[in-house]
Length: 371
Ligand code: NAD
Ligand code: IPM
Ligand code: MN
Picture 1 (tube, helix red, strand yellow):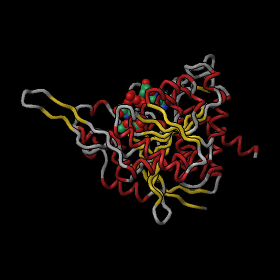
Picture 2 (cartoon, rainbow, N blue to C red; picture 1 turned 90 degrees about the vertical axis):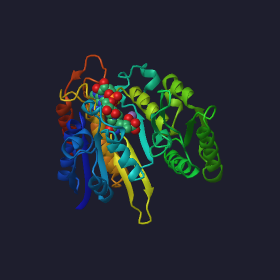
Picture 3 (spheres, rainbow, N blue to C red; picture 1 turned 180 degrees about the vertical axis):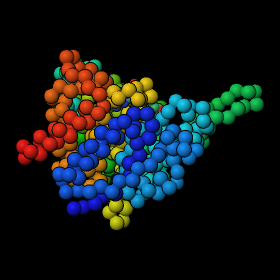
Picture 4 (tube, protein in one colour; picture 1 turned 180 degrees about the horizontal axis):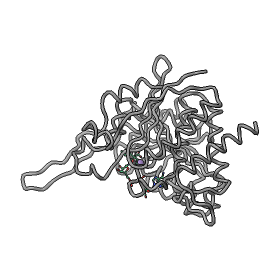
């Protein structure tokens, strides 16, 4: 039996609620699939602020470095809205990304067959959708300098953020996108706003050069980000892999989640560089946040968190078969008609977080028994 070290960081709001459902899937894997997880759990976000006075301790960053993979819930709590920018709960995820250099955030938007009617768009527009958004996550306007709020002599205040991208930062994320495309539909659409931003112009040039040099076999297109938002709603299946910067990727992936039926469905993987010894830091989290509006009600959809664990098995532990099993179980549960309330489907059984998690484990049992 192989043993893998996981760091589990449930965070705030619905984070711990949906993580509890993943724990059931983890135990199932241990019982039936010849794998052991050595799990450490720690506090991040508002939960860490309350106990340690900081959104994330250096010790937790060190544990993340030492783990085979990090499973992250979500951070953010309106009770900490008043604290300074460097102490907000959200700093936890931003710091993990930057300290571990987790630069490539893979956000797959796939429409499960049973959910084709659950999108706010017409089923014939979204059925069969399978796109991968590759979002850069350690650069761009999230981290660029200068930043801050300053007060001018006349009392006027200025809020400042700066979009910065360097050639290596663009190249490495574009490379991830091209490599992924080769294993999928072989098409990459690079998204920026080169019509108004120098960082976007450089982005387009670097992606174009890299494509010509190393990936001429992949079909590359370019699109302005505003048009891309529109095209994702008009005809999302025209895309295969989308590669884009930090902020545009954040917006476009929340938009894409709704094509799949709910924000509560979308998992993600955030990968760092491959080290000399072959190790690669990686963090797995749903794209949704802590959902303070429904936290504590037992209604949160745990599937994005469960599917994030499936991505962890596939990308960090090389256990694609186990990942497939989980994805099949989720598909079966949805086909059986169970829905958490965030998924809009007429005439289907409304269930809460725990029932959904239990149903996934029961589906895993059925699939395993059927061989
Ligand atoms: P959100 O993603 O938390 O919620 C947006 C809407 O979607 C809400 O109505 C929520 O109830 C619903 N929703 C989200 N996930 C759901 C799920 N699994 N099941 C059912 N419904 C779900 O975004 P927000 O409300 O804008 O942000 C709330 C907090 O979360 C903020 O503090 C924000 O900074 C933080 N946030 C954190 C992360 C992260 O940790 N990676 C991601 C996004 C937002
Ligand atoms: C996400 C979130 C984060 C982001 C926040 C919480 C910092 O929205 O992971 O999508 O903007 O990257
Ligand atoms: Mn987001």
